[in-house]
Length: 340
Image 1: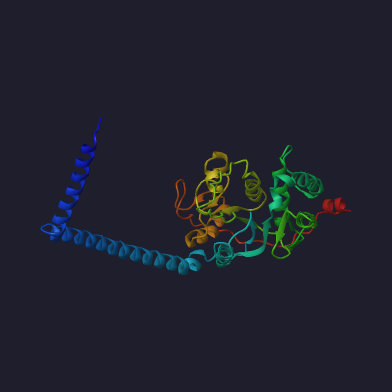
Image 2 (image 1 turned 45 degrees about the vertical axis):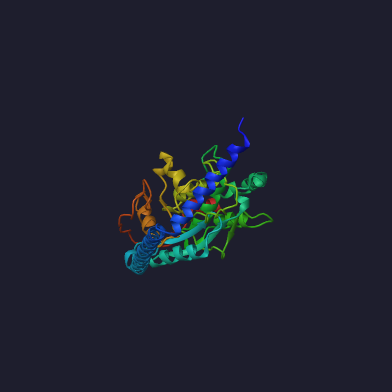
């Protein structure tokens, strides 16, 4: 057993070592230790100042680049979408600054924005599915062409929305068809409207820009949420697919790449990637300029994915679209008989 004398010797050893350390630190080693610590602090301070200087220079260069792209945007976009009519469909809540910036770039490209449609929570709410199924029964009679036989609920609703937004009356090209007006009215009225409009839409669009909702920022104390699956995103993907199918061309203006982003889901599916056009990170000015260029390319028959991530191209190829012909077309005798 360890006796009391062992503990006394141990304590004396500890205090003796402490005393020697204090004596050396306050005596012959005082200046050496002080100089060493001072030198290390000075080195860390210099490194911090250098990093701060590099960061400031990089931030300044980035701001200059953004300013240049912003200023050059009108010249890059001039004539890209001359006389094209574009409707903007927001798949959820989009930041005002981003929405306005996309509108401005479309206008700079020569496009006319026919309206803004925003999907409400009821569009994909599982608890509202029965309501949506009942609503589709009222929509199908106004669809032409009708969705493929066996199309799911999401596809049917997306078809109704897009046909309502692009349904131009050939005899009066500045107006919607009566069926298109009915479709938009059914989708946007009632206690649980599936779609809201910033202003009434009275003119059919040629092309569609689909804007993904601004991703919510998770707080540090929030539990991490699981990334949505392709099934979760199906209602949004259906709108983009219908927009491409029933218009001259459609583009997804998406948020940053990452788990749950529509762009990543599309790029992960060869069939979707081959038919849908995307622009990622449209909160950034470079992507905002890319949206009209990508839309012009899609109208011309070019499909692509644009951004700075993997499997993306930095900028769309330049295209020249043919002039728009909006000469009224008189209804044929067959049409008149069928209407009667």
